[in-house]
Length: 226
Length: 226
DNA sequence: TTAGTTTGTAACAAAAATGTAACATTTAAA
DNA sequence: TTTAAATGTTACATTTTTGTTACAAACTAA
Image (cartoon, rainbow over all chains, first blue to last red; front, top):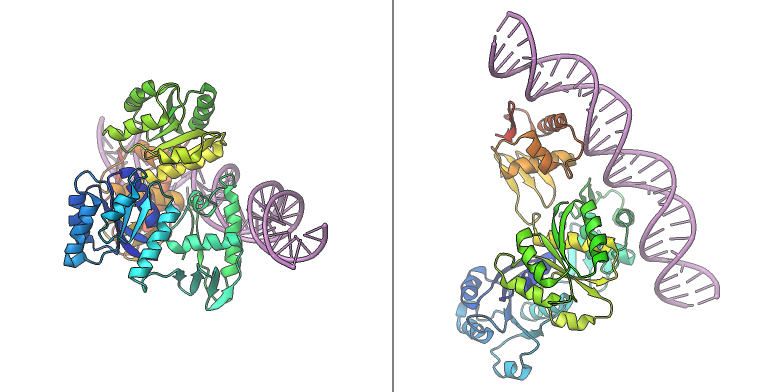
């Protein structure tokens, strides 16, 4: 999964949260806290998708959207509009300006992610893949299968999530805390040594004869794919 | 791990417990049992993170949070909201005011610690910054690798941190005390001569044939890159 | 239920990193 | 030059970190 996403949103905390999570998922993200700057930077950044707040200090989301549709260089940019709960849906839809999807705040990140994928798939069907690949390793998120060297490998659920997490940013070294945070969503009461054991299990599963080790240990830092 | 944490929480026993444990983990902690005092002291204390109770005798957590987001001097302060079990999550999230994380009481200290680490890591993105470079030396903080003349060099953890520290301000001379403070986690009982030995190890690792010495000794002052 | 997986943790082994002492060498001042 | 302080170098014991295995508890599917 890759692509460039631009955000126009005046609440810095939302930008921070969304940006961080999108980057973690392999997107390149840039943002602006107001409409006028946003429009300018947008053209430079050439994103594949725009997250646009409905209420902004200067230009409204609607106006920005209209500007985009008039500008040939970014005319077909897909837009997801973010609206706060109070704002009446009817009014917003009445003033529709060719938005691809809506999302009501507060939203969960999973929800946002699903909408982004859907919109990108529609607008750009070839760039979005749910397969994660690295060297001769392929992880199919839809069918929940993993292959090495085109042969399927059986993984347990935790091993699968662990590998999925590493594959989003292969080569990047993650601390045990980071791994815990991302692979064990709810259970924070897990010893950090537990990760070592799961790493060991994952290694055992994905290592096949005559192939190099894929998981690197970085002493006192963590692990990464390599 | 170091940093300053402020707590606003009306239950003294919780403050005491949390404060004690945080201090044991190397944080500097200050606290207040109500919202109005808390806001004032907060600005003086300039913490890196705020633990904020949802229900307080005077101002609610939400109000405090909104005040913070309006105040330019502490606008981007990360906040972890503490909520009691009864309080409905939906309501709290509906009234979201840019909080970075939530924690439901009663919570284990490990859980709190994990959240704090995660939030600090997010807000303090020292891992996001690019590679550090100096002459033909490259240090990749993401992948935790070091190259000289494009060939990878293996460093131990302390050597890595030492080099990372020097690379932020190459050419600048650091005293042994400064090095100790910045490179050793809790500057505990480590002799100052120990640094000399690690410098020696680092030198040995990064010196390659026909290339000039990169670490300068400044007699009676310290060391620097050059 | 039962049988088979999956998961977390303890316990021990192995490997790597670390701190320090002890001695050698260099430096700068008298 | 002589001398004392500062730094370089090496070796080694200790501590920390990681790998590995085993096992019981939790979970799942039949």
